[in-house]
Length: 247
Image 1 (cartoon, helix red, strand yellow):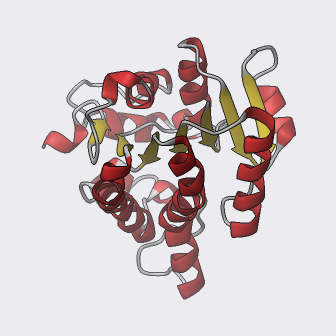
Image 2 (cartoon, rainbow, N blue to C red):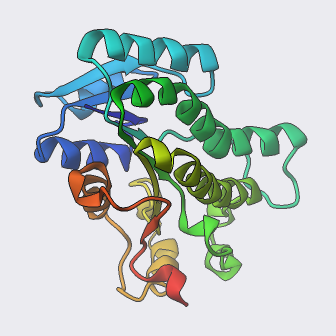
C-alpha cells in the first residue's frame, strides 16, 4: 500500500493514477475529501485519509488510521507542499519560515512519523519530491514580463534541503532495508499559469526538449521508485525536467 500526501493536486493526481494503473493500493492523504472525490470519481483501490502535513498530531493520527484500515504501508510519497510570498527581497520572516516548512519541514515530519511502521514491516520506500530549483538557480529573465510567477528564495532552498534530507535518510535507513529516493520535477506549470503564453514561451525556450512537462510525464518515475525494480536504488535524485538542469 502506498501513501501519497497531497495526492489530488496538479502533479499528485498523475502520480496517484500512475501508481493505481500499475496495481498499487493507494491512500491519498490530504485536507479536503471533496477535492479527492472530484479528482478520482470512479477509481477503485483509492482511499482518502484526512491529514494536515503542517501538524504533527494530524500526521500521527492519519498514519494510525491508515494502519488500522489497510495495514502497514509499504511506500510513502512526500508530495504535499505549502508556501506564501514570492518576492526575493520582500519576504517577511514568517513567510520565509512558512515556505521552508512547507517543503522541508513537512517532509521531515512525514518521514519521522512513518518510520515505526516501515520498521515494523521490515522494509519500505520513501519518495520525496524536490524541484529543479533545488538543483539550479532560477533564470530571472524568464520572469521579467510576469513577475507574479517569480520563484521565491525559500522554495529552492527548501527543495535543495529535501534532496539532502533524502541522502541523509538513505544512509541512515539503508541497513534497515528502507530505500529513500527523490524525484525532481522541472517546469510543470499549473493550468492557470499555462494561460499566459508569453511566460510559457519563456519556459519552453529554456528546455532542451522544447516543451513544458505534463503531469503524466512524472508518473513513471514514481512507479519505478515505488516498485521492486528500484530495490537496489537509494539516495538517488531522479530528475524529470526535459533537460532544464543540464545547462
